[in-house]
Image (cartoon, rainbow, N blue to C red; front, side, top):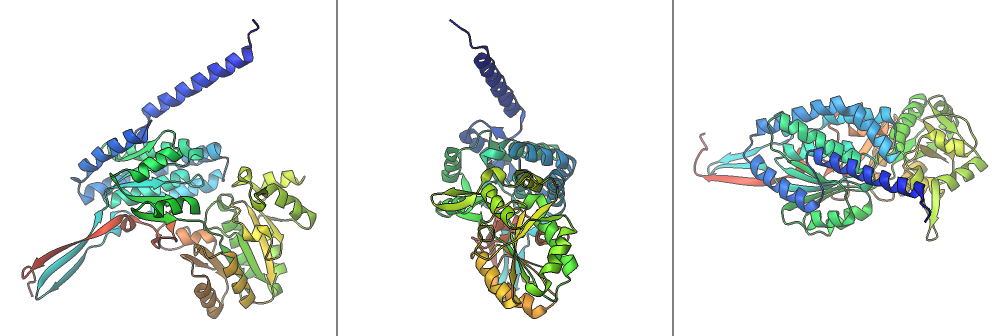
Length: 463
């Protein structure tokens, strides 16, 4: 009998790989083989955590921030290596902004009402154990950001990460647990499963111990959460347009749009996905884009790029998942072009699939329009009613106001790169769970709490 040495070698390698992964899981804090084990562990941790003070919560959060700064580069490299998506330098920045600008316990405010009838306090209390589904686009960033907000609100959390980013997500889970333990917190306050599946998602969602569900992802997962019968926060998809009118600082607009649309290879759901430029400034805008890291393609090159970026599925064009979040040079290489820009730009009409589909690729279609009113009309249509994010470059307050009222998005950025909307170069806090469908907006600690009212009648009103 002939021995197939290659086949045997492959089996041996698989066994060794599985063994190494099992050993890694055993060493990672908070990462369990099954959802049942994870839920049991986090339930015990929450019981302990209820005894901790707000000051102790803040000490844990401070340590998580410290660990995140230290691990930012490792997490960024691991995320790109595992998923093949994004840019390491940009992911480092994303982790740093999560560490710096995710609100902690200061986000929880107590209200008091006093009068002749006594004193009433309204305080923000935890839900308990929160079940969280995280994406492959911002895996560790979402784990860390959600963890800070959720434990600031007094909760414990069980994650079911995207399967394509489980190593990165679980590395982050291990990291936050190490930080919590170093700060004197309980073991397994944050848990996850080693190999997340649809079954583990369903088990997490239906578990009686899980009192709240939070999902960062596409419309399918948000719909599933909203039909769970539990309190749910859903962060859905977007297709953010950007308008440039004739009053804009066109040079700055060109630079800012390239920075925003190319950031982490256009993976963020807030990033500029399509541009509407008033005809009188369109040529100037394109020029300044090419001077700031964009590469302009034309004619047949655009048609060829469509074949690369999109695939047909059941008679409709959809994104080619193999190219989501890839570097612009990878697309150009497929076109036979040797260049390494941050962003690919092209002129299209409104009905072009690059305008209508949320690509999450460093490709930005530009649509020329006759005036700002046309831009507002088309940009609002291109956003598809997601009410997620939209952007404008203009010095005309009336134009800015008109677009803001028409598009009704959760985030609306004026005269800056899109990422200013999550606090990078802009004021206010950051988050990677932007809850447009359920209305919480940019989530923070208070989003993961419930109101409790305490009433004292005919007492403690001392005036």
